Image (cartoon, rainbow, N blue to C red; front, side, top):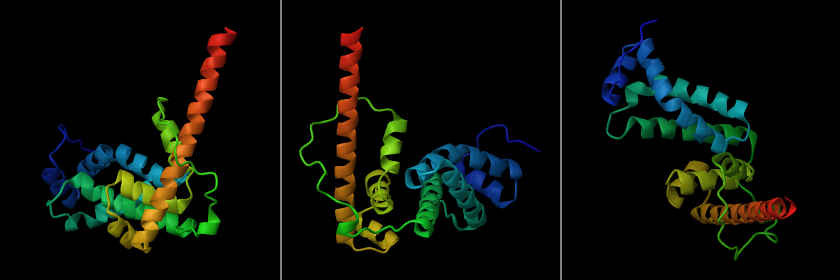
Length: 196
């Protein structure tokens, strides 16, 4: 198979992909796959499901390249397709809306101290993945992808108020989880320094 020597600029890469260049398609995939897999993992809990979502997303990317007009970044366009694919996966497996009774808020934090524990990216990903599907979707779309509540509501088929409520609850759960990690980290540091 012919490989492309240099990374092509987006417009040239898209044009080569449209002409059916396997090398260009491979370059597009390699350029964006790591970031898009990370995106899928934020929405989809299990790695094999995220990988499947990634593959299906790239199938749509390659089929839809004729629709890319070059008005925004190629990465942003690919990202939107992956977000829609991940949301489609979630809709097929889990409910994206929760009633108040579905998730008790009695234990949620309100005035937690700032977490000064240095969390690893894997820890943060795990915390986001543990959120209920609806909270996870809203948190990812609003806090990480930059969608407005109106856009989130439209994407998920919920009201803007539900989007705001689910984001608030997601943040509260994450604050509580970070505080718990901070507490366990502090305890283990104390034991390590005082036992040794």
